Length: 80
Image 1: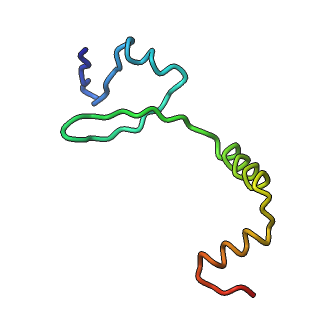
Image 2: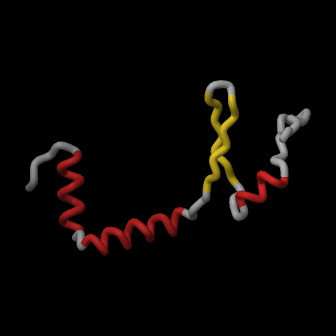
């Protein structure tokens, strides 16, 4: 399949290809070995990502003190 670059440097994905990515509006674009790579990206609102982190912390049974200790450890400070 061919796609033509417009005068505004835009490409339109052929319908046959775009149809395989229903619900995807964004693609991460990179160049590798002279080829353009498109990787589908699902954008997640920051609020829902934060909620996922909080749910994971709760599921692991972590307490505020555990998180504070992990922060102190990662910064190289000794426990109080």
